[in-house]
Length: 334
Image (tube, rainbow, N blue to C red):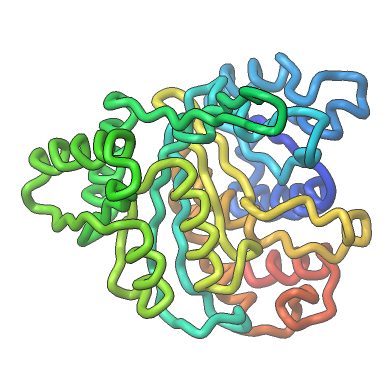
C-alpha cells in the first residue's frame, strides 16, 4: 500500500540531501512512498509565500507524516523559526533524538554510545513569549505546565518500554528554578510510579552534562525540558561524530515530522558535497513510524555497510566524494 509523505526539501543544502534521501528510500521501499513536495523557509519566501505556507501545514495534516531538510532562520530579524512554528501548529510535543555510534570514520572519542534524548518540544523558553519591557531590557517567559510535563515524561517511559531500553534519566534545574523545573520534576516522579519495572533517576542538568562528557555509556533514555533538551541533544550528537550523523523526529498524537537536525550550511550549498546521512537516518525513523520496518532495517544496514567500507565518503567524513557519489555507493551497499 502506498504511503503519502509530505517532503519539505529545505534551504541551503536541504534540496541536495533531500534528493539523496528520496533515492535511498525509494530503493528500499520499491517506490511505495508517494512524495508530496511542499515549501517552507527561505524557499517559500523566494516563491512569494509566507515562511510557513498554510498549504504546507495542511499537507502534513492530511498525510499525517512528513520529512524535511534544514530550514533557515534569519538572525536578528526576518521571521520566527519555522521549525518552532511547525511544532506548535501541529502540537509535535516530542523531539526524539536517537544517538548511536556508527562504524567507520566518525570523529569521536567514544564507541558503542546508544543514548536516546526525549525533549519536550512545545513550551519552556521556546514558547517564544518575550518582549522588551523597557528600552534595553528584554523579558522572556519560561512556560511549564503539568499537562505538557506529564505527556513528555510518559512518552519517554513508553518509548523505553516499547524499545527495550533499561533506564530513564529525568534532567532538571530545580535548584535554580524551583517552581518551573520543580513542577516538571514533581510531575515526572508521579508518572514514574506507573512504571515500577523501569529504572529511573533524577539528575540536575549540570551533573548530567558533566557525566555525559565523562562516560556516556551510563545513560540510556534521557527526558528533558525544551531548552535543556535542545542543548543536551546536540551535545550527545557530538559524542558520535556530530550533527551530520544523527537523525531527528518531531512527534505528536496525530502527526510526525522527521528531520535532519544540522543547519543549512550556506557555505557549501549548491556545491553537491553535503553529507546526506543525517536525513537518510531520519528517513529510517520515518519508515519505522509508518510500519515499513523491513525497509528501515535495510536502510540502516546499508548506511553501516557504507561507513564500514569507507571507500566513498564526503569531505566531512574524511573522503572526497560528492553527495551523489555517496548516494550511489549507498544504493550499491543496499
